[in-house]
Length: 402
Ligand code: LLP
Image 1 (cartoon, rainbow, N blue to C red):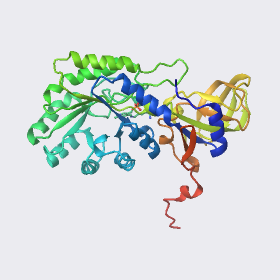
Image 2 (cartoon, rainbow, N blue to C red):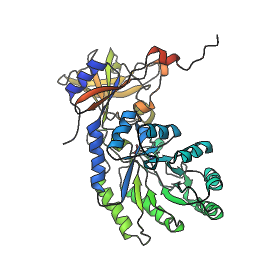
Image 3 (tube, rainbow, N blue to C red):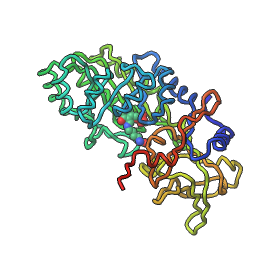
Image 4 (spheres, rainbow, N blue to C red):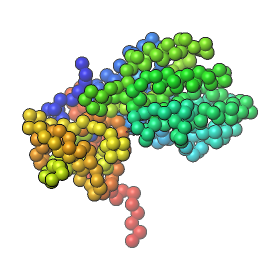
């Protein structure tokens, strides 16, 4: 049975903790992880949660406890993962465009590292030679992903070392003795078509024989989850089958382990954003429902034109008509235009679905508004896991010189 929070639970949380509030459902995260591990049960596959999607330390602890590893995109994420209890070997730092000093820090912390530029690879090789095996992030020149902003493997993408520069990597290996143990690609987010992953594997198959010490093929994240009614998702069972076949049939087959780095797949559907209606405004063009949040709290609709399902949980049987759901900040922050909704009244509570991934994590204090609270529901118990900002937070790092 699909793990979901009920309307009553969400209303009770809005009453107890106020709004806007992000709510996360622990059992849903566990359910998603189980779906991955059971689909790949017969294969040498390991999952690293891409924690850039949601780094609350309680979420990291849930991920740790369920046996999943963690993928980080900054040294601070690495430190958060260590803080949450992950052993260094269960942490992967897939860096991009970072200062070399951060790579040194990651090495000193003993975590797995994927290096994404020839420049940093060269520096790393000079410094560590054969003493610290690393992975390389390659750009496979594959266009994939839900939209251009979240596509990362194509020919104009900044990410990774372009595959056509593999000779340069080999030269570094040859001249320094550097050990490359992992080939990584990540082509984008919201990849529904499993053949994209197979294409990625095929690109890597040409390169695998060039590296003697390879242990891992890391295919990144990007599994699609449904955001809309009738929206497709990555068929994980089919993906498992095709990945299994691709490896089984290949002449270069060796006991390579496959890594994936799912972010959205693990936490998107486990999250909800609760907001309250401040003002209803009827105009010729539309009826606006201004809610007590904005792109300062959930930027995906404005940044990517992303669709989030919105439900009026205060009036589930209200007459349906069209509303435009907008925020309360001083910019155009339209969450939904002319969306069919149950009648909205001022003070009603609206809930955004799929708010677990890249929701709170991409929030800001724009307009000097507070960041929302975060609540975790586990075993049907709701607990505050981050306080809503308070006024002092807005001044915390400011230095008054006048
Ligand atoms: N691995 C790497 C190296 C990545 O760059 C990412 C995401 C992931 C894994 C996880 O991808 P996921 O499974 O979550 O799709 N903020 C955008 C998504 C940007 C993803 C950036 N990298 C959004 O809200 O749609």
